[in-house]
Length: 86
Image (cartoon, rainbow, N blue to C red; front, side, top):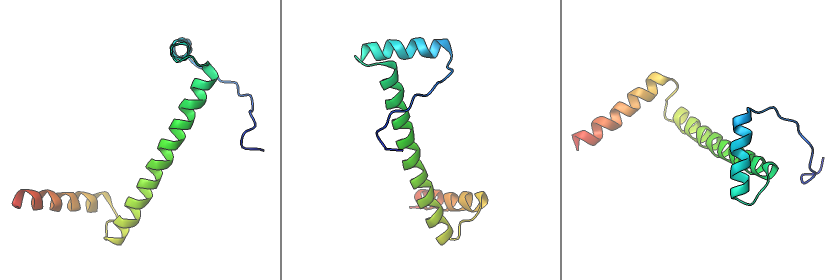
């Protein structure tokens, strides 16, 4: 499937969400479809960045010997003590 090919999608959304999105689309001089398209792109990009950050933290955490929530808490406490002790 080509990246720019538009494919129709049927969604069931609460009526109040449709009304609010239509108001916003009108305010922005856009359409409901473009508003949903923009929101979905934004969500996907935020998730991609968040996943990238999680991956980086996990990699660095494992390298530092942090393998559990307890390890995270211990490391955070060490940082806190270091800040207050300075």
